[in-house]
Length: 221
Ligand code: HEM
Image (cartoon, rainbow, N blue to C red):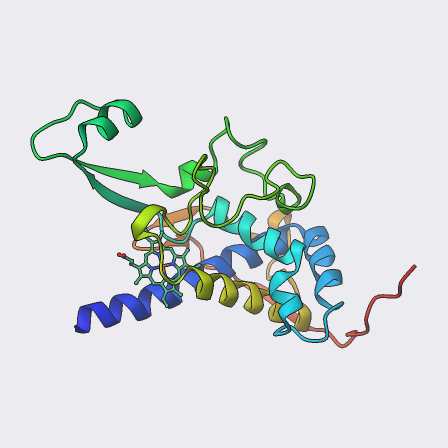
């Protein structure tokens, strides 16, 4: 019981923290994306409004972060069906089956599925983009990313995780301007990943958060 509860609490918090940290790192390196996101965010009456959770560019930023840096590095399945092993995975059925590891980060960076897969480009997820309609869970016909796993054992906290990550990032971008803590190219932001139980930044993010006082809605032109 204790281990189940700790898995639930740990799995439900560290995963969201990882997603927020990676997202902020990209917004710092690419301030143009941060500004575009902020313009969308300040058009809502508040970051907890339903409009915020459904905002297309905000959602696209979170999906792009989850595609590149899925907080859970891999999922496992014990596959016993000979048909699944032979036809889908091209493996020889053996003994009592095979344990298959799905490396989630590699799926999201597959160069045959994604244009410039290593680039952080949220525009791919908005209307007209190459990934319009792709969501956090794979559809029945194609798997282009699966940050929350797939099938019967997909993450039961997906809705909560997406909502937390989305609204946290919205609040942080609305309230602060995010810039590098250090001078120079990339400002010391190191995007090298370390895979443990969660995908973390090898060098934890250090940033300058400057409070914003210009919370006026954008002028319509
Ligand atoms: C951005 C946030 C999150 C990400 C990326 C994430 C990702 C994942 C992944 C990849 C799995 C394995 C799924 C599979 O094997 O197919 C998983 C399982 C799980 N997640 Fe999450 N998760 C997140 C947030 C949460 C939250 C908020 C909770 C609970 C409050 C939660 C609870 C769980 C539990 C209990 C499992 C195990 C399910 C099982 O074994 O059947 N997760 N998660």
